[in-house]
Amino acid sequence: MQVSLLASQGVTSKRDLDAAYRCFGIDPGHANVIGDDHIIGSFRARLSDISASQAEDARRQLRVLGDARNSDKIRAEAADAMETLEQAITWLDLDVNAADDFVTTMFTLKVYFASLADETLAMQP
Image (cartoon, rainbow, N blue to C red):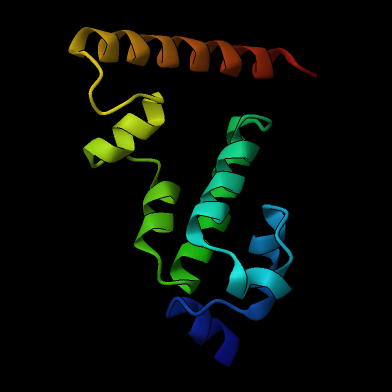
C-alpha cells in the first residue's frame, strides 16, 4: 500500500532508477559521476537503433532519470519537443549561424529520412 502511495506521488524506487540507468548502458553505481550530457548522449545514440515503440519506452526511462536527478535538461530531451532555438539547432545538427534556406533544407531531409526509417522498421519481421 505504501509503495503504491509513493509511486502515485512521483517517487521512484531504487530498482526502477537502476533499471533506467541500465537502459542506457550506465552502471547505476557510477550515476553520481556521470553528467546529464552523457545520459542524453547515450539516449540519442540508442534512438538510432530501436523501433518507435522502443523509443517511447526509452523516453519513459529518460524521464525517470530526469525526475530523479531533478534535471530540466534531461526532462526536455525526454519530452521529445523542441521549445528552444538551441534544441532545434541541435536536432538539425546545424550551427546557429546557418542560413535560413539551409535550415529549411535540413528540416526537410530530417523528416524525410525519419519517415524512411520508420517504413524500414515496419517492414522488418
